[in-house]
Image (tube, rainbow, N blue to C red):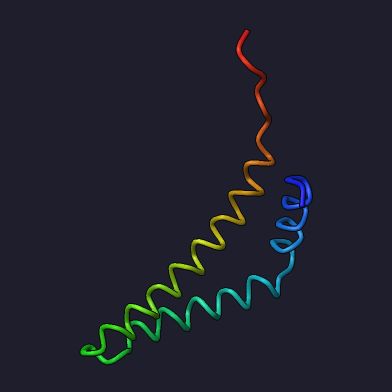
Length: 78
C-alpha cells in the first residue's frame, strides 16, 4: 500500500461518523472499566488502561497521517 493510499483510507475512515461513534464508545467503556475495576485488581485495571491508551494512540496516528499529508512539503535547501 502506497503512502497516498494510506492517507486516502485514513481520510475515508475519519469522514465516517460511525467510525467516531464506535471508537468513542470503546474508549469510554475502557476508561470506565479502568475507573470502576476492583481497586485490588491491578492486572485488570492495567489492562483496561492499556486498552484506552491503545485506542487513543490509534486515533492519534490516524489523525497524524492525514495531517502530515495536508502540510505542504518543502524542497531541499539550496
